Length: 85
Image 1: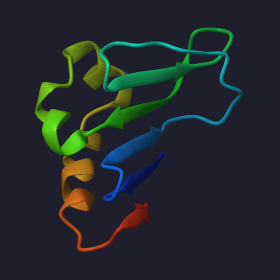
Image 2 (image 1 turned 30 degrees about the vertical axis):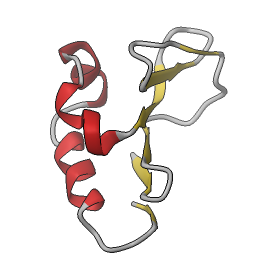
Image 3 (image 1 turned 60 degrees about the horizontal axis):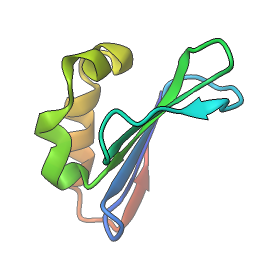
Image 4 (image 1 turned 180 degrees about the horizontal axis):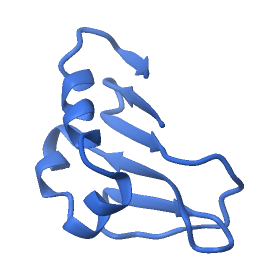
């Protein structure tokens, strides 16, 4: 798993699995899970996570697993413009 966060763009991406993206679902305007051709979630893009991180639906929380949102909150607090963990 890898997380990237761009403070200037206020955008985060959570990489869950390697693979070729087949489609992107739109759960909300700011929440975009990427899936492979078998429907498995490869990653999730969160636009404006500083505003929406507390609004992630349970379905998506279950996709990304426990602790990931806490890690996103932690890296958003870092005094850096861009980070990849």
